[in-house]
Length: 375
Ligand SMILES: [Zn+2]
Ligand SMILES: [Zn+2]
Image (cartoon, rainbow, N blue to C red; front, side):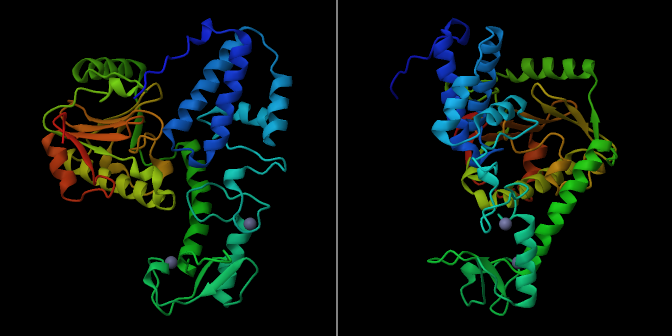
């Protein structure tokens, strides 16, 4: 690796340098936004935007003209991108194209509307309803291909050779198909996703998550820093992020970011199996720590947690998609440590290792260290 000289600290750079650095970071975000919200490298650029912008604001720099120029250069709506970067992680900064549609959410079929997120089928609600109608009535519609096939590689999980499948009309290729079950499940996910979010806002949960008091937060983190020698850092030379205990196994989870279409399946599998394992390690009505670095932290009562299959229900996620997420026994004897930048999860404590081994998450295919040593 060549030694690159790191740029001087933000406060020491000149204003014109910082304005250009801000534009460069915004470009990075714009180019990489497809992978959000689970892309550590893009998130690092968003954080840079936030830091540089804070300094420019301190210097009372008027960015209007330069941002407008960047919008013209890129045909992206950069003012809004900047605003969304500053609101991250509440808002996911997806680039808006000149017609106001967020590029990463543009419907693959009509190209005129947005899908709600990138987690499911890449169609807007209108086209999704059209697809379902098309499959159910067996009526071909523009932009869709209806087919049955003997090729299992084109089947969804529900299909056989008799199933009517639908895919986008890609002219020169046939994508894997969706059956009517796939399509109606996706509709349900969209409705229930909204419903779940509303429930979360009203906090009418099942009592599985209980926010830590300030004192509890202080105690938990002080002890975690001390016992695990926790060193949060984006720099590889500082990894692993903790002194990994014996016994422990650390898995690379980077494959989840390359498996765009399977992301939801893999995350779901990890959530459900991690919860199952934690339930085996924690007695009924007992709790464990769910720590989110520099964010609200919780007690998790694993036996009360009924909607683990729904990613929105995890107040602290298992998959470290942008922050350090830690699940930790109340006595610190076992747990999961998710490192967002190394893209690893360290499982420690024999009882949890055993419990997970009974039903291994698909993502835990590649151990990179055991007991803190490279394997
Ligand atoms: Zn559409
Ligand atoms: Zn299906």
